[in-house]
Image 1 (cartoon, one colour):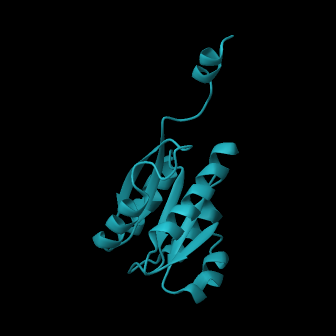
Image 2 (image 1 turned 90 degrees about the vertical axis):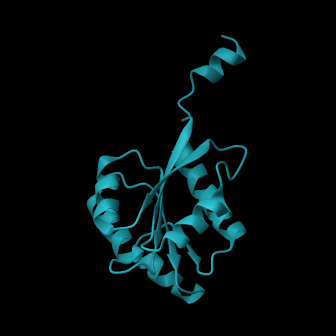
Length: 142
């Protein structure tokens, strides 16, 4: 088998689906713009599923096919930390979750929610990208 044949038979996806939840469209836009189509050359392109309400987050996550969820902890009426905890409690195979916190000191709340990572507002594109890249690499290697 040639190297080309071996590469063609890997199970690496062409795209990774990232759910971005916030009731604020500008927060969703900041996340998408910070990450771009491909935050690292070693990763496949990202496809975004932008969501503004908690019921749609639950529906999308229940349907499967999401590789990472970025949840706004400051969203109202349902914050991302509560949704993260619910997803981790209810889904057998929950993808990694990154919570956007109101401030750096809220990281402990993100760990309570069982989110794998937290990035505070205001969003730092470099910090967000680093956290997302680490979570997606872990997801791909699993």
